[in-house]
Every structure is written in C-alpha cells, then in structure tokens.
Amino acid sequence: MDAVIADGRLEPEHRHRVGVTELPVSTELSGPQLAARAAQRALRAADWDTDRVGLLAHAWIYHQGHDFWAPAHYVADQAGVSKALPFGLQHMSNGGALGVQLAATRLVADPAMDSVLVTTGDRFSLPGFDRWAGDYDVVYGDAGTALLLGRTDGHGDLLHMLSFSTAAAAETELFFRGRDGFSDAALDHSRPIDVRRPKKAYLEMGGMEQLKSLGLAKVRHILLECLEFAGIEPGDPRIRCIALPRAGDSVYNLMYLPVIEDVIKAEPLFLGRKTGHLGAGDFIANLSDIIASGILQPGEIALVIGGGAGYTWSCAAFQAPEKTHG
Image 1 (cartoon, rainbow, N blue to C red):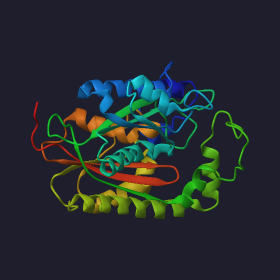
Image 2: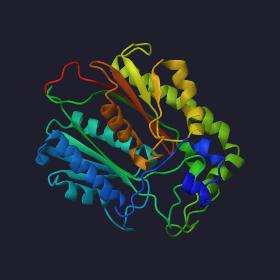
Image 3: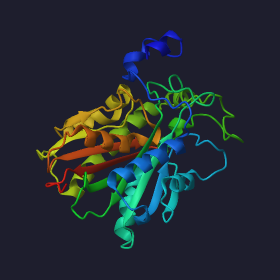
Image 4: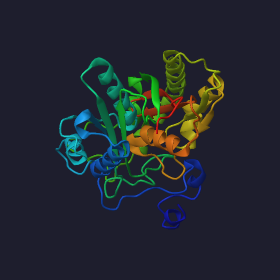
C-alpha cells in the first residue's frame, strides 16, 4: 500500500477508506490459470477421483486472457475433470456464490450427479484495469478459488452446507452502466476501465437512496430466509460468525452491518484486509479462510454472504461436522 501511495497511484486519504494493507498480484498467470491451479489443489486435498465430478462451474468478472473463448472448458481440462460438463458463469462479484448454489441445485435435482467443482479466477492487470484506482473505495486482488461440493458420506467432510438464499434488485444494474451508451467493443468507453464514471453518474441521478434502501432490504431478506431454510433461529448460539464480501468499509456500512447488527449477534468477519476484492472469488475464499482458521467448533455454524453488481446478494449457512472421521 505504501509503495502505491508513493507512486501516486492511490491518494493517501484512501488508505483508511479501502481498509486494505496489501493485495495478491499475479505477474504471469491469468484468471483461468489461477482457477485451474486452485481446482487441482482442492481435488488433491480431498483425494477425490476426478471422474466423479459431473459439473464444473467457473465464474469470473474480468478478462480471462482471450476475447472469444470458453474459459470454463480450459479450467475443466487443466483440472483433469474430463467427464464434467464445463459451465461458464458471468455474474459479476456474486458469481462464485451462485456457482455454489448452482452446484447444490444440480446435486439435488440429479441423483446421478456425485459431485460438482466450483471455481473462480480473476487477474486485474494494466493496461485494462487499474486495481488500485479504478473504483471507489474498493481495490482488487488476483486469485483463483475452488470448492468441491458433493453428497456427504460422513467421512472427511470439512463443512456441511445447510441452506442457501439469493435475492436480486435488477433495477440497480444502472450503478455500473451510468449514462454510457452501448459500445461496439471492449474498452471503448475507457482504457483502463473506469468503474467510477458510471457510479458517479448513477449517484448524480439520485441512485444512492435506491441502492441503500434495496440493499438493506435484500440483505435482510436473504439472511432471514437462509436461517429459516436451515431451521435456525437468529439468536441460535451455534452461529459463530458471518463472513462479508471483501469490499470496502463504505460498502459494509451501506448495506451489510446495519442489518447484521440488528438480526444476529454473531461476529462479522472482514477477511479481505490483505487481499482486497477478489472478483468472483470472495465467497469461496471466505469459506477457505473459515476452514483454515479453525474458528468453528463441531456443530457450530458460519454464515457467508455474497454480493455483486446487478445487484444480486446470497447467503449460505455452513456447519462444522459434529464428528470427524480422520
């Protein structure tokens, strides 16, 4: 962060607004390559037969290294899941969360489906994207993430997914479009991409009150519905924590913390202080950090919230297994 401020790429007063001290930066690997590596690691860690994976859902928000291409197929091939159907999911920052929901839905609907692999991969590099100064109060880190979801046999499970809820407010798509017309090719509006310009236009049109009102209502809805689907009361002492998207503090205060502090008493987790926003990868990265931290005792529950332009919000409940088997 200090080096970026010294270079003049970030104003000093933005240090506290973004709430981030450092970012992961990939100097060589593209988003799909990062996703493929994450998938390989997830499969090895689970000691999973790749032939059992019936679907690979890959999500992203930014350039995948080629202009006219199917990145999900590349990730599936590199991960060695040759029998899986590759599925590309472009749903902005909530793409990883919706990939998990898609995986769960497919497992419920198709008895022949044994397991699903969900990946994300984004790299925010110049000249197309300025990770530090391209957006208001949000900075972007490079990452690949992967999650393996399947039916439990009670052996070696890291977490059990109890429920999932999603809600959208399509009228807020204007937040990332502003007054810009529809262009003929990528980067026609600006190079590098300037996320601030359409946001500023939306705010000048009086959009802040709309975004705040809808955001608070939708986050409350998904949180309460997720708990209801799981059969959990908001005051259940088993709810250990709730992980928020890896956004800036201004976003937390706008649409997340007022609801969370009113509905539940669980500890909010801000896991992006050393990563920034990971594109479509926030949701799965948060799950990974929760597992790695060991914060959940057997039977305890973590809630994970996702959110992304469009706008779409998701909430899922995960429980640490009551008993472990090796």
